Length: 337
Figure (cartoon, one colour):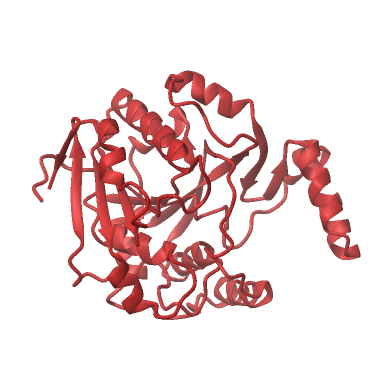
């Protein structure tokens, strides 16, 4: 595929149409529409890669339903990973969607100088897109403060600036390097009442919105784990050095956080950007992830923070570079291969 101009940022998401709920496609279209508008406004050279993993035959393909959103400001690439590949690498597996295998495939094939692994339901503020147009360091991995919303979709007809105002007015909580900051009293109360164990109850008491101003003065985590599945930005050489995400199929949970630990072990600095991103609320398919023991995860992260030794060595064939997948570029309302 010919590249006409240098790309600074490659956005990479993994998706399987219909995997979450009925508003799945609406959320993705909203994200693409806003990202493209702000990329054009701030002259951000970028591409948006959708890794269409094991697509169900009963749902439309992304290259058909997203083609009207492609622009010269932000071309869209759809990389399709077929069912035959999934069956071969994960025989007998109940879940049809391997999110981080899909992200590895997209990262490995991205054209950008910097690669941003993100999710399909993340709205980027204009401030964030403007920041992405500015310089970044090659020896640093970047995360962002993710603002969880209490709405499930934003109408496709709403203009970009109004959509951001809606996001700003519907924040429930914020993921930061100092921990969760609850903005909504009702969401905090729901968390408090759902965790009745005495230790959990006491810990959750400290998460009430009144404590937010105090938390900002607390020391940050040794390895900053700020919802990295929604935003992990690093230079392409950095992604190759850590070999992307763990794709061994031994674990399903916390792979985004493990990746941040791996960046730290390989000597990359961590920076949490203050510009907001917004997470649109949605249901979660229980087959997407089988929960892994949180204690094992905590032990591994603690070990990496204290010793700088990776918990595992990832495959040099991460992202399956020898596989040939369909890679379609959508641009200026046309489908191009």
